[in-house]
Image (cartoon, rainbow, N blue to C red):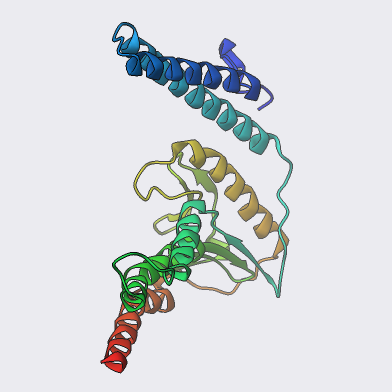
Length: 268
């Protein structure tokens, strides 16, 4: 792919300067709408407000589209991926940014829960942090860090948050992007393996991220397969639960509630 997707078909390219100019215009229109509203003059206020909102939406959407096409072009034109072989295997983690950010925010909230707040004592703040914030932080951390692909001489292992699927190297076929945030790995004589990549759709669909993420993940997996020579061992595909992550997800609320009960009992 040699053409630039941001400019093909005569599509307008939203550079940083153009985007800032339109955002500035939207800000001016918004301020003008506020002034006319506060001045008691209804004439033109609604028109100014609607124009400001439309200008801001167009600029932000246009900039996001341009950045997406630029990233897609950069990923598609990049050379072979590089991977690091450690102890005869390559680990390719899923780059799922949103759960990691949410986990960090929740952890920060738990650490600052001891700050004094009106009408709430320190014990109540600590209980709130333990019961609500800590389990959510742990669950978000599992979503953000547990998924990965591990390539060894024997197998290609797809690890999702709560499941594990091991495909012998001799059965690992072609990789196919789906455009839906996942790669499909052909497995001769059995069901294909689905490999989630990029940002998961927790509440919304991150279509702007999926296609570049699929291309990047596919290149890294192919590089890992080339970097680790296969062996003839491994007879069949195996699928099962990841008991470790399941235990962490299920056990965290139990541990937290036990700590809260012990804390309240010690204060009574």
